[in-house]
Length: 242
Ligand code: NAP
Image (cartoon, rainbow, N blue to C red; front, top):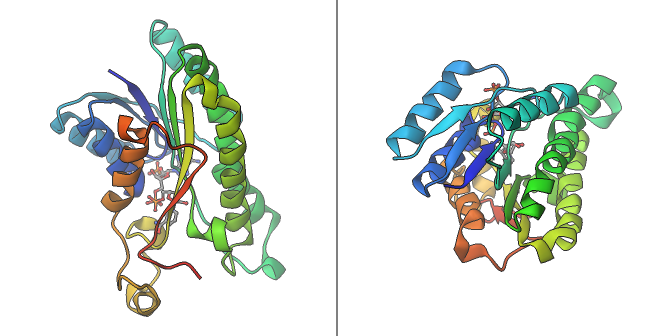
């Protein structure tokens, strides 16, 4: 049974990814920051999907908390290793650059970009030794085209895309693939204050996407069918490019 870690599994896209991976037979480690009820609910669905899992709370923006949680898990599971990593958890804190506070910049960079480095580096050695790994990073349309009011978020997501392409070339020979999924507007808590009516006119498919539509692609990139795909960014955005 492959062991998968999904960051931000308590809600939205991460929750849908946890359920998808459970359907594919993975044991799912459900990470969250604060929302224990949401994480327990996800775990319930993981079990209903016929698999099993465990909660693993830590703050991905805090390197010490992250390392402590991952080291403790390893101590309790010495004979096991995480072979599937979905770097999903993220935040946005939008503001025009002119008005952006240092806090808004650093919180978004720490949560969306630096967490990728800390978690991936920590788990990479086991993947390389075992000559198998699947890393999927949930980025954003914002990291491809840049969106006004999101210089911090666009920079973080573009940073993860660049790191994905570099890392894919470093670890390909060890059968570790590294890819990104780039959602457009998806119906989750992150977009609950954005009026779908205003935006759907500019989306060719005429609506926001669902978390399950993103999870499906993440699941594909983890599956054996995607064994020859690495360093890629797959958009799930209803055709919204420019
Ligand atoms: P969401 O509904 O707001 O959920 C965010 C998840 O991340 C929650 O599980 C939350 O945990 C977790 N999280 C946030 N900060 C964390 C931290 N410091 N440590 C650990 N967990 C943390 O978000 P979403 O819409 O599903 O977004 C998921 C990913 O997709 C993000 O990377 C986001 O940037 C990306 N994305 C989303 C959209 C969209 O339209 N929704 C579009 C493009 C990209 P708690 O529940 O414990 O707070």
